[in-house]
Amino acid sequence: MNFAARTNYICMTVALGGLLFGFDTAVISGAIGLIKAQFSLGTVQEGWLVSSGLAGCIIGVLVTGVLSDRIGRKRTVLLAAGMFLLSAIGCAFAADVDWLIAARIVGGVGVGMASVISPMLIAEFAPADSRGRMIAYYQLAITVGILLAYLSNALFLSLGAGGFSNEIWRPMFLVMAAPSLLFLLLLFKVPESPRWLISIREHVKARAVLGTIRPERVADKELADMEEAARKASAKKISLLEGPLRLPLLIGIVLAVFQQFSGINAIIYYGPSIFEAAGIGGSNALIFQVIVGAINVLFTIVALLWSDKYGRKFLLITGLSGIIFSLVFCGVLFYTGKTHGLLLLVLMLMFIACFAFSLGPVTWIIINEIFPTAIRVKAVSICTLALWIAVWMVGQFFPWMLEKAGAAVTFWIFAGCSIVNFFFSWRVVKETKGKTLEEMETVFIAPH
Ligand code: BGC
Image 1: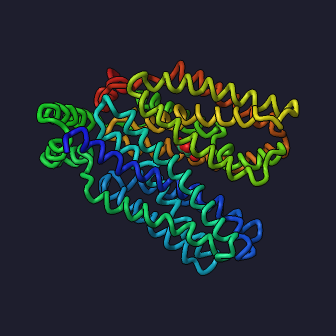
Image 2: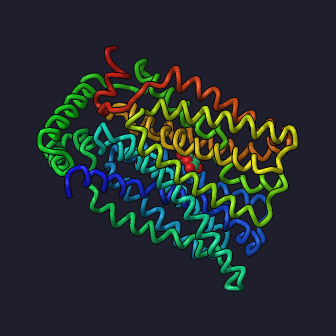
Image 3: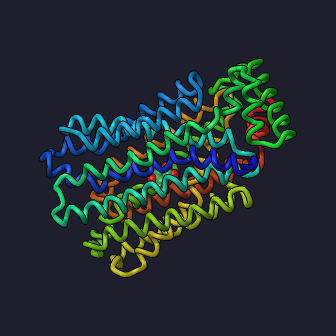
């Protein structure tokens, strides 16, 4: 295998964390109705079951922030893979609701851990000129995971409808054991991050890893740059609250929160009920979910092809323009009551497509490339934590907004948030295309 192919292989393997993230967060939407019926859940227990994954995520993000500098990136990602496997088996064989909730928390911890460590590890392995594409593998994997969960849920539901079993929700979860196991096995072949090895002064090991993924001369140059950055970092202890790091932290948090305030998960998860409210639902709801999932996968490929060619900002600005347009007009359709035509479907798909090549991948790309190695994991954890809190907020408030303010106003609120993100991305976000992570340190933290 040549150097580029080996780096590609490593990054694709690590990106599988995204696939499990996507699968785990989407599988519950198909299973919840069946579980509710089997255990006669009350609303409080149902709420717990749905939000337990999210609670686990928050724990997972915090754990990773502390753990991955201590035990290394590779052991942390292995641990995340172990959590997914444990959760899949735990959910499938849960004897009661409490057990199920505990297993969902474990899966959530896996999602939280993977959401920090997978894109960050990819950023640390990828060469500067293809880092955008390689971090976008992770987003692509999330979208494939979501689609797989929809398809497998649909398959099991049809088996269940055929009188197969009333506990068909169990295999829905168990399916996740297969990719988790594959992820775990493939990870053993992934080396430790050379940047982390340098941070613990294992220079020889770092050079050995670089020697397997870069040609001789490039490996020497990258090693020297990493050593220089590590030297500077230890000479002048950098803290997140220091002046020069405030800008990347602001960029990371704003992009993370406003990715969610675009309403993406409201459309992905409540899309079918929005359609039912508009009178187009029924049996088409499932087909709608699958179409949304497929468009989400397909348009992420645009980011793979373009993020290193035209840059992150170009994708953000064009994608956000389409997002704002589609949200504003969805609002207009609801406001004027013209929701029965094909136009609503087209606008929602346009929203998904634009998110898929911009806010989806580019948020993860930028968060993982703008911080110096010495504090990267802590900073990325803070931004990712902000993202999960925003996921929670939208989940809590979206149904309430829909009921109190109506669909039109809800869409316009999401549009308003995306307009803020548009101006922020245009004026404040800095282009990161083509720079090494060490060069990035000079963009943000020198020459103060
Ligand atoms: C977001 C998720 C979202 C997914 C949809 C990710 O970038 O962080 O919240 O569900 O994209 O594809």
